Length: 352
Image 1: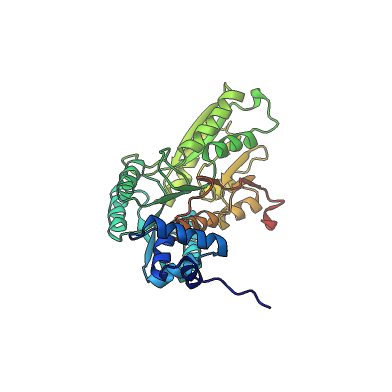
Image 2: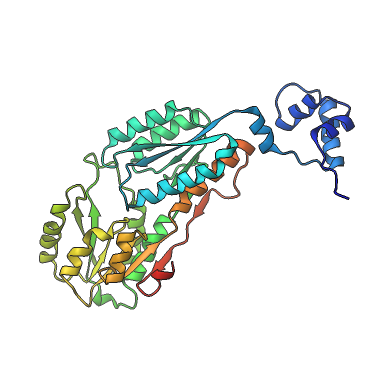
């Protein structure tokens, strides 16, 4: 015979109290005498009752908002993958009275970020997912979230402060250290004299520097293993793509010794055409993330290695962990959930 499912009414009958008293004990709300609470807990234990918290929460009809603050989306770029993961996460919890909202900002404009933060806070969210490009603005945002007791999760990178609920992304310092190791693998110290680091022009106030920890890991590896090596930076401007090739032409003309080239963000594809026009069999090039354009550069040989991750998983899992917190008051076993650092070459990228 099918085993009878224990209900809240069974618990109430065994404890000799009302259903409402059992509900108040389960959800820790309202006044219940110590004696009644003990009777309810004893009945729950004896009956092995497993409350359906999700059904109970749905019955309250209370809606929750999980908000996400992201840079403006450009098709085919990194933040599109983060957006897609957030949307997928929202769809997975949409039947639990949770809605998701995205607040966009210009990643090159700190004022735009501040405006998006104000709009996010006005939405009265129950949880927030943050991609923290602007350190000062992010600190202002999380200070307000803490004051309102709203949990927040970092994706992509994190600020080194102690109150975030969780983080999903690469271990940034280690990813830079790994990048340097791959770039110089099997090289003697006298071989690696100069490295070219291609960077992105960001906001004019220089508040945005999302790859700072990755660069720190990279530089530490080089200092430890190639102390005489010079790390040379060149900045390109994606907002003015017509300037990229002349900028690189001038930079590489001054340093024909650049056999080692790296970009620490997701846009190595921006220099792929230039590298293809100036082939060098001895050149080593490493980038990050498996964007379609990056993968094509890998296939064509302009890029030798991509350090990749399943980007969408960051924001999808961020929504999930916040939903569990909001609905079940569940705290994850860890705060830092580091994504795998996958090493892609033209030989294995087809199977990724």
